[in-house]
Structure formats: structure tokens, C-alpha cells
Image (cartoon, helix red, strand yellow):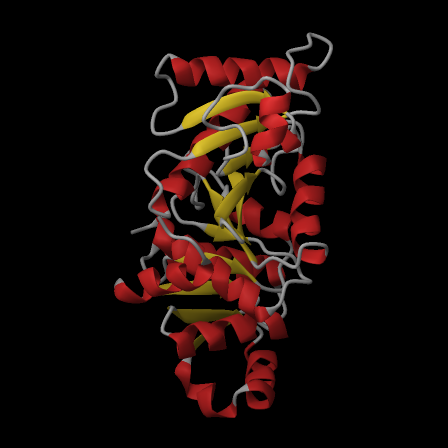
Length: 299
């Protein structure tokens, strides 16, 4: 089981090197990710966007690497950059897409285009990995689905389990999070959590152990689980946290970064190629780790 991002990087480096296409790459943090990934031996990068702007930034940031990247000039047209980046994956020129200056909605519109995109399933979801002292943990979905229904939560859970398997965890423990650990018909999130746990019990969600509803303390602290009478292998030992809505996931993710100071990476699953939509505030290292996480899901 991969315990931290350093181990993740080592696994990626042992595989054939992949290529990330960066949509509208004329931004410092995205280019920093490309430079770091190249130097670390994690990935090559195909830069799509305003060629003059990209070259100016490379001259400032890494003049020795100006000729290290292929650049496709789409000028300042961000929509075109998104479409060309998707086409590069469809043509086999890249394995993953990293958001540059394009906004998330613009990039996902190109990705999910029914005729020219990378749509694979009806539900895509963002899976965030964070470097807890006890090992890598996953949280979903704080970036795509606003208020998912049961069928969507099932797909979200399966996407996260696929990432867990890619991190060499053959049987991840999944906590479906709610405000409380009891089923309450007035709280739909608890009903969905109980149904997902039952579906797992009956073999409908293989490759993992699902428990829910679980309050956050029961999922991360063994003593809290015992005090509340929860007898489950997931109690206090969760590897994956499935949150009830995007607000909970967004707050969870930002607290990991700004309060806990954990290293994080995330990847959008459910498309023909992994999509990376890190925050504009994320630095180059975080975006490089997103590349590594995406590439390991493809091994």
C-alpha cells in the first residue's frame, strides 16, 4: 500500500513516462508543474495556449528548458485551448489533462462533449488524496457533484475505490459521512449512506468495505467509534471518506490544505482519461502531484 506522495512518485517513475496536456498553459503554477514533472521524471508536458506568453514565462522561470516542451499555439482563446487539449488526448498525444488558465467549467464542457469529448460514464467525480501521518487518505466529492442522489453517490464511491486500488490498497475502508451515525428519515444523507453500506454487504459494491452513516469522529477515531457502539472495521480506520455534498467536500479539502498543512492531490475520474482541475491557488508542486496521482490510476 502506498503510504505517502514520495512512494507514489517512485511508483510513477518506474512506469513508462506519461504526458500531460496543459490547457491554456500560460500561467506560472501550471508551467511550474510541467517543469517539476520533467525534472523529477514524472511526466512530459504538452503545452497548449498562448505561445508567446508561455515562452515569456519559461524564459523567466526555467530558461534552460525552453526547448524541452512542445507548444501548440491557440492564442488567448481559452475555449479553443480546452478543445485542442481534449483532442490531443483523443489522438493519443497525451494521457491526462491539467487545467491551466481555463476555468473548470470551460474545460469540463470540452471533456464532456458528446461528439468530441472524453465522456465515459454519466457521473464523473473528483477524488482528493491527502498525506495524513498514518498514510494516504481519499475524500470525494468536493469538486463536481453539487448534491448527488443515491445513484450518483454509488458512482462517486466506485470512482474513489478505483483510486484506492491504484494506490495498492486492495480493500479500502469507506466511510459514508453524515452529521450523525444513526439513520434518520429526516436526513436523506443518512438514508443514502445506509443503503450504500447494505449494497456493499450484498456484494453490489465489490473491492471495498463500506460503512455508513458515520459521523466524521467515528470514521477517524477508534475510541469515538467504540464509545458510540460502532462495531465495524471502518470505525476509526477509514481510508476513503464519501461526503454528502459539494459544500462538505470543499470545506474538508480546504481545511486539509490551510489548517492541517497536508500535501494534497486530486483527480477527476469517470472519463476516458484523468482530468486535473486543481485550484488556481494551488502551487506547482501540488499540480505535479496531481499529475502523478492521475498517472498511477492508469497503470
